[in-house]
Image (cartoon, rainbow, N blue to C red):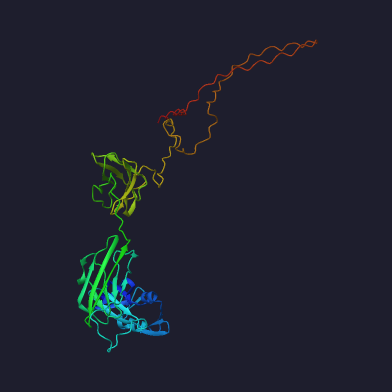
Length: 426
């Protein structure tokens, strides 16, 4: 099952040279499974997958083989992992495995050294020049480089006689012997600089094989930058935010002399930080009505005393949910119009003078004029004058007599009440 898979870093070598220095191999019930496509790309082979037949096709030169994608093969995130033996057979390689050193050694029969014939003279020591990795004087950029020494003409090596030192430190317990090669991967990261390796191992013929070389590691870990001299120590909220909370305080602790403000998701305003203590600041946040932010973030933008600006976000979010109040309670006119009281004129009463002009009045009779009309009075009776005898000579016509001037009077606003008629006597 996929849930039973675990992954570990293994070094995969090909004739003593790493092809996958730190491959993520799958481990199932103590068996190691290698990624087929990644290994094929490292060896220059073509890997294909037939979904209908559930088979993996491997072609390396003229060698073509298939791996059934069922049974022990696992598919993890689109990559096929197959057992070591199945992979070695498909690629036409020999394979050796050392679980203690977490190393998989592949060998190509076409390039492997010929074995020593049985009738060859036996010598006490083998002085053949070994193949080392990295080569003598090489540069590597890896804190965990794979180190190996291959003695091609030594035959089978004796692990019990193995001795490996790195920079004068004995690391034989972490090294391994696979076939005709010695493999070692450092358990701790190597420091940048020059390193020396020494390997000594015996073989089944009684000979002793030795190799010594050195290399330079250019990998250096980058140190973290020093902390700013004005660090922000903490940021927190003074209370537990529950739905309905409409105000809270945000505290920031740091160096004296800082300025800044606090912002909250869903709230359009910003809230300045005010001095609360020698090294603490507080911002009072007011949440308006109608906010619905279940995952609101609280952030502070601060300018340090040296002029550097920092933006800090509170690690956790808060739930800001405030009720929506009616518009009339919020200080706005109610959306439902209130029926306006219509003042109708009452006979005998004056219209109130404090009636706001915006209040419409009921339809009334059309007034003749805003200025009260003058009261007409009876003209005095004219005294008849004797008619003059016409004179034959022409005379100018007399000028018209001007009409008497009428004095305007204020018209009463109230109508006079009719005089009640006397009640007839019984």
